[in-house]
Image (cartoon, rainbow, N blue to C red; front, side, top):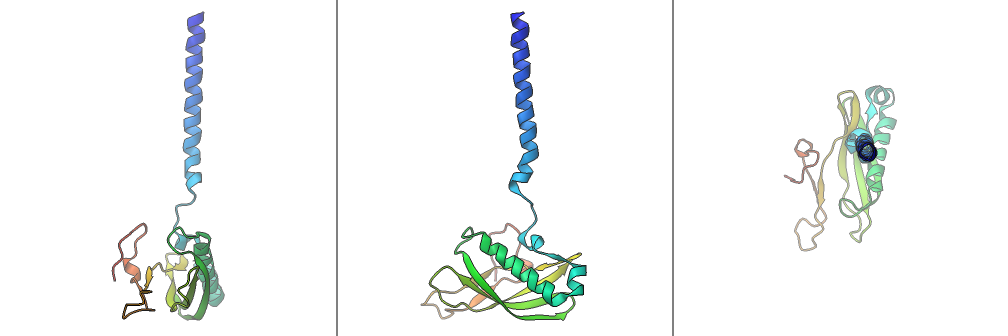
Length: 162
């Protein structure tokens, strides 16, 4: 009888452990959130873009940079604000805008950068690029910005080529 109780206790313990592992396995994907890129998360449908391209492009840019502001200083100096200027929707597959970024630092005004919203499959989204501002006072290129060509930026990549 004592052996049956011990055996039952061990089986019950294993069952509970198995249940915890299985339940945890189902919750892990939710803990890490959606695996879509920021560009995908802030995209809009082709139908929405084609019905009102100017307003939709403005919304895509606004959502994209607002989400970057929410990340704080995860990737460096936090973005404190942005201004979208000169929105051009003359091409049906691309909208461009000059974006002036403001950071929480003492660098002062930075040059505007041209960003694009492009059609990728059935969505319009910001075309990812990495921009580097030259803030070295001793540099002959002080106050300038260089951005990677969009084709060179890869998700989760740490190398930057110009």
